[in-house]
Amino acid sequence: MSAIRESIDISRSPEDVFAYMTDPRHLPEWQNSAVSARPLDGAPLHVGSKIAVTRRLGKRRFPMTMEVKELDPPHSWRLRGVDGPVRGDVRATVESLGGGTRSRLTLDLDFEGHGIGRVIAPLVVKPYARKEMPRNEEKLKHLLEH
Image 1 (cartoon, rainbow, N blue to C red):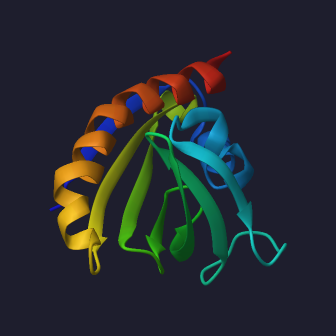
Image 2 (image 1 turned 45 degrees about the vertical axis):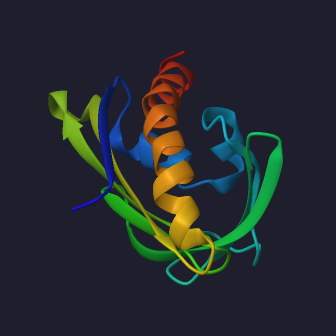
């Protein structure tokens, strides 16, 4: 079971939601803590792709690398952190609603702490992410619907 699970219905097709969500360049547009994100190999996203992400937590910036572990267009994908003291594990699924005119996006997020991250993850990162995630999904919904 994931640490955090959020779902939201979006008035866009699963293909549109999937395409937007799996383009790393869009991450800072809808996630408040994301400062930047870019693919490291320049190729279209595929299993094994790595993405450089910089996040802000308070006044500090944290660079990290995420790797695509699963990719099933337009239904699901999974990213896992491969470095840093706190490594995210994100699973996303997109369900078709309304004959394909709408989608239900479900995000499952968990964290794995390494070293000092074992303390930081449960005390700082998880509560911050739990608070931020619903706002991020509302921002995503607004961006995709307007």
